[in-house]
Length: 150
Ligand SMILES: CC(C)(COP(=O)(O)OP(=O)(O)OC[C@H]1O[C@@H](n2cnc3c(N)ncnc32)[C@H](O)[C@@H]1OP(=O)(O)O)[C@@H](O)C(=O)NCCC(=O)NCCS
Image (tube, rainbow, N blue to C red):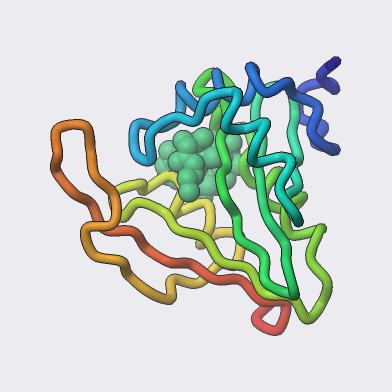
């Protein structure tokens, strides 16, 4: 599969291997997902992906409720607006009455800042939701998005 020019999100232009590589460079918690796991995920009902050559977002939209399953930008391409653009692409899949939610690690300041700057609201907390490799736990913050708030 051929990637589109950098910065131009549109459909899932990355291979599962490329997605797994960017994911591995972006996450320890939740643990990185393997290419085969991305392939399984992409075959599930309601799942969609938007990508550039250096980042992607995967979401699932079923019955008016969308979940942002993962979002990652290659470390070499961060702070250039790609995360914000991918988030906008994710939201472009929603209809006006749809709602969206996501989970983000409480200590993930860059992601929380991005979501807040993009109009998402913090709406809940799952205590001890993530488990780090050293067995420490971390809370998950639930964030929601709705057209009615924008
Ligand atoms: C979170 C992530 C997707 C952001 O991608 P990005 O392309 O660097 O984000 P953008 O350049 O579009 O940033 C948009 C806004 O988000 C906020 N932001 C992004 N990175 C930030 C950082 N390191 N520190 C503080 N704010 C940050 C800022 O408000 C920024 O706007 P500004 O650059 O005008 O100040 C990227 O850091 C990443 O892949 N992280 C690892 C994976 C991850 O945490 N995914 C989300 C899990 S739920």
